[in-house]
Image (cartoon, rainbow, N blue to C red; front, side):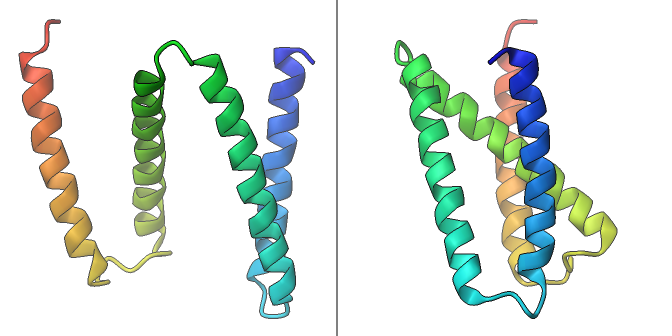
Amino acid sequence: MTAMDLAQEVAQLRLMLTGVEGVLASPNAAPRALEDFKSMVDDVRTRVWAVLSAQNAENPRAFSAHFRLRRIRETTEALAADLRAGVLPATDPECAGIVAAMRAALVELEGRSAGAAP
């Protein structure tokens, strides 16, 4: 499989996931179907993580750190989009903790990037 084929497969999986998500979010979704879907997603994540870890075995800590940072960025972008769209309420009590955690992380990031060489 070429990189292009893989990119097409991932795009198709993303479309399928969006469709399945809509069906599972409906009030008529069977709880068993949701459990099966979660198990399948967990299995995919475990398999992908194993492959990625094996490819980056020479520096697993750096790989893990990069992966975590990427996931945090993606999650933060999705959070901002959901807040803009009104999908998530900014008034939820959990938001105060998110703001505090983001401020603390921002202080650390800005402090470390200020000391880094250009």
